[in-house]
Image (cartoon, rainbow, N blue to C red; front, side):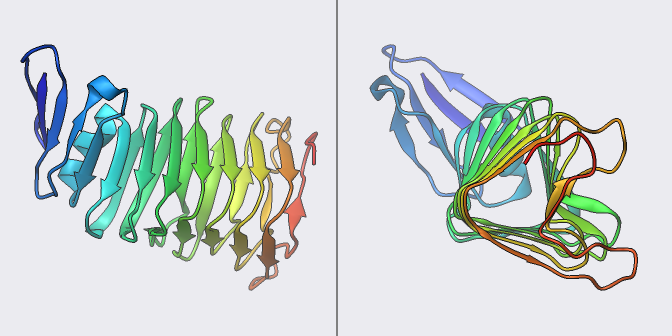
Length: 231
């Protein structure tokens, strides 16, 4: 089956029981023979082609910076590997809903919203694996990663936020094996203070933590456990 993917959807053509994926929508073209058990790879260069690729999952490679005038939300609901390929997603928020998302490729994800938001949210037992990319919450009240009954594994890279860099909600798991975690105005890594949001598990095997406080209401510390949580 020959598959053409663009911002409007997917067109399928069947031929000789072989599957070839051809992606071309303001992007580089790539062909992969799925008969060799390889996942399809999609090169994207704009919001439209990225959203189409997210719906299909698999390997997604940025071919250019994607910059929007307002914050764009990208909802991952299928397993995917997002290779930033040295590029940036600017004014972006990523939701990981019940799937596994791996992020690598030495690029950047930035949410510059001035409102209280986050760059990445993990929900519904979803899993984020961060290898060597950088996640920034650069707005005045922005978080880096929020885990709401999900999982995150930080192997390398950078998570930096104006508020808490990584915040765990109810029954979430966080494992940090390396990388650099920075909070400019609160604790670096921790759990939510609501009494109903306990049961979180944080494992730290490595990494560099850098926390500071710019307001009297903030707590400048490395790790903060608020409830019945485990470190």
